[in-house]
Amino acid sequence: MVADFNWAIGGEAGDGIDSTGKIFAQALSRSGRHVFTSKDFASRIRGGYTAYKVRTSVDRVQSVVDRLDVLIALTPRTIEENLPELHEGSVIIYDGERTTMENAEIPEEMVGLDVPLKRLAEEAGGAIMRNVVALGAACEVTDFPIENLDSALEKRFKDKGQKLVDNNQEAARAGQSYVAEEFDHEFDYELETTDNDYVLLNGDEAIGMGAIAAGCRFYSGYPITPATDVMEYLTGRIERYGGHVVQAEDELSAINMALGAARGGARSMTATSGPGIDLMTETFGLVATSETPLVICNVMRSGPSTGMPTKQEQGDLNGMLYGGHGEIPRFVLAPTTIDECFWKTVEAFNLAEKYQTPVYLTADLSLAVTEQTYEPDAFDMDAVEIDRGFVVDEETIGDHQTDAEQFKPHEITDDGISPRAFPGTSGGAHMSTGLEHDELGRRTEEQEMRVEQVDKRNRKVETAEDRENWSPREFGDAEADTLVVSWGSNEGALIEALEYLEEDDIDVRVISVPYIFPRPDLTEAVEAAEETIVVECNATGQFADLVEHDVLERVERINKYTGVRFKADELARDIKATLEA
Image (cartoon, rainbow, N blue to C red; front, side, top):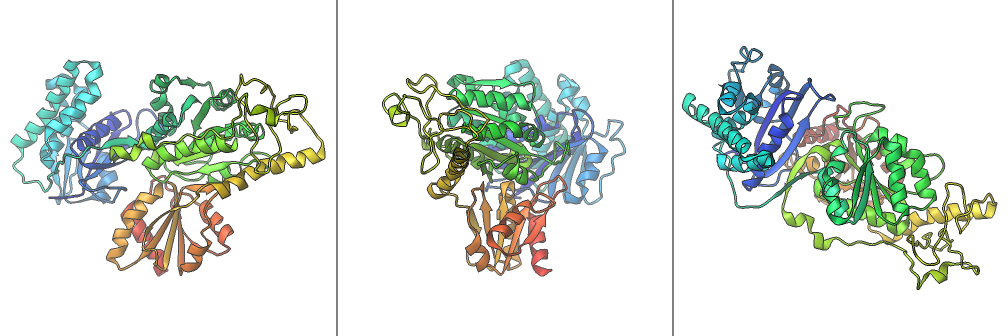
């Protein structure tokens, strides 16, 4: 029995690859198996190669690897693209009756299953179900109980009527029966099931769920890959809690609407990707100067300009740290796992309101689109704490007024945090402006007040550095001579890479950093190591530059900017090669 199984379906964009892959992933998770998915899709609606890969095990899996056991190939290119990952005994399911696949070349050491996917689908009710026929065939190859696939199909199609559910289940059984009756072959795969109960979700969904749990009640956004799923998750859900989702006409409008809602007292959020962040930068400065709490989610993709919208990259770090004219206090949080997308979203809202400062919540495409299984208690709603910060009411507002009973929303304080009054608070009427202002929010060019306000805003970050926990996550051998530092979605691949490195007697200490600004001091860790390597998905080593700046030592760099995420076995090879260089 193979404990770690890798499956994929590939074809042209528009062939239903994503929905088919998700159905199979849901079937596996419902059978008590852990799942980790990855997607490769073109930056267009139709045409261009696209694939959906699923890695599954009864044990937890946190990365993709360079191996495919079963491949559903809807086009010849699918076989070509995945050939390096196929191995002796891999099974390739294809439809030889289709003109494009009738001459498909299957390597001799692999098992080719020519299954008439389209014909069987038409017999079950429609050619559109050919992918479901292929799923049924995969169930037979892997000895996976088709009842689990039935459950996933019902979940996927029940809103469209029972007949459609029945037709899809019939199509799946047609694929299963065809393989069982036509191919006399002992396959090497058997997918064990368990009684475990798992939640399957991706990073965008976890961010949306975290926003609702944190009390977000207004979201405005403009569709952009790969951040759109945040808005799609919230739509229809946030309304149950008295919230609203607005699809704006562009990114400028989105952040301005979110700013307005936040000024009105609502926990507010917008989400976008790199090009949208560029457009939002001017309002970002207004958010900071007006001391309005706002969460801005940036789901990174390959840039610059339009770049490769459907490909992985971590190239926006410098933009989030330094973007904007003038000097703007901010926080930058970077979840390292899908479940951390939930918890860091909650934390982002708390930081925004406690320090009345904009917060960048940054994920990347790999986190956004990857589905992974978790036990339900990984998202314990009872553990969510909401802190709305320094809010005054009618009883306390008098302590923050002038002798003329004027409220001071930008009051100079030792910790930099001014009082905040929600609209409607008696005695709390005030104004704020993007111009430099005094304690009352009225514009000023008085030099002493300018210095006091700038220093006050910057003190909020210093206060947060003292009051909050900015600790990184740590794995591996704490006493190892080799230190590997990473941020964002690379954590899972690094953790699994440790197993490969142990086989070569290479001990490694891993530090995964979820806070970009403020960030933990890694000086002691770097000084204790003989070799420090920073791993990230960009060309210039933006986080490595920060580490070198902080610790005043040079570090080695492993950078990947192909548009594809790190794989565990690949990363282990890269680390080993770096140490041997």
